[in-house]
Figure 1 (cartoon, rainbow, N blue to C red):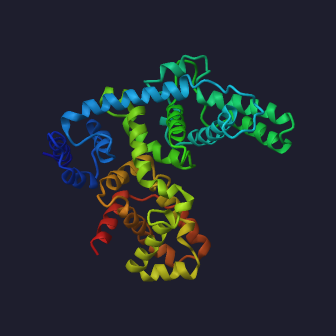
Figure 2 (tube, rainbow, N blue to C red):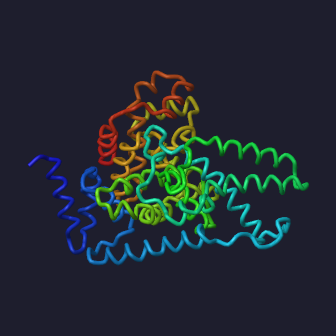
Length: 384
C-alpha cells in the first residue's frame, strides 16, 4: 500500500471510532491532512470544536447549527426591518444610527472580500449553492447593493449640513465600490466572495464587542474554501453555515490578536511578538543580534504573520497545509512561533548579508519555499 493510501486509511479509522481519540487525530493531522475524500474539511470541523468527538452526536449537531444559521440570515439579512425613526435623530441607539454603523462595517468588509486570494479564481466564481432568499430578491437583499445604496443615501443626508468633507469622502468610496475588484454576479447567482461577505457581516452583528476587524477576511477565506470544495455534496451545500461556526470558534481563540486593548496581555499580539523574539534569540543569537543592531523590530514583519496565521505569506494550498498543523497543535498556536522562527532561520544567510532595507523587504515578502521544509524545521526547533 502506498504511503498516501496508508495515511488516508489511518484517518478513516480514527474518524470511524465511536468516540474520537483526539490525541490520535491531532497527531495525524499535525503531519498534514490528505486532500482526498473531504478529509481536511471533516477533520478541521472536529479540531475547531464544531463537531463533537462522539460519532452519533454529529448529525444532530449539524442539523441544529445549520438551522440556527438559516435563522441568522432570515433575521439579520432577509427581513431585518429598515430604520424606523427620523434620519437626523442623533441618539446613538436610533435605528438610523445602527443602520449607518452597519453600513460603515459593510463598506470595509465589501472592500476586503473583493480581494480575497486574487491568485486563484475560486472566490470570483459562482457557488453551486447560492442563498435563494438573497439571490432572487431583485438585488434588494444583496449586501453589496446595500453598500452602494447606503453610501449614496448617506451622501444626501450629509448634504443637509452634516459635513461637506465627509460627503465627498463617501461619494469617492461609492465610486470605488462600483468599480470594485471582483464583480458581483447576476440575479440568481452568487460568487463565493459574496458568501464570505455575508458570513463576516453576520459575525460582526452577532459579536458587537469585537465587530469586524480588517484581516478577518484572510482567516475565514481558507476555511470556507476548504469546506466549499468538499467531495461530499451535502457538506458543500452547507459550507457557509459550517464555516461560519468554525470561524466563530477560531476567532474565540485568536480574537485577542485583534483587540488592541489586549496587545500586552498574555494572549495579545505584542506578547506573541516578544515570544517570537526570545525564541529567535535562543535558537540563533547571530541573526537576533543583527536584527537588534539594525533595529528591525518583530512588529515590522511578524505582526501580520501572527495575527493572520501566515495566511498572507503563502499560496492557499500551502496555507491550508500549515493550518492542518496549527489546528492540530494541542498547545494552540504555540507552534505558530516555531513556524515563524523557522522561516527566519531558513533565510538567515540572506539576512546576515543584508542591510536594514533589504532585510525588511525579505521578511515582509517572504520568498516562495516548500512549506514542508519550514514545518520540518519548526518541528526540530520544538525538540531543542
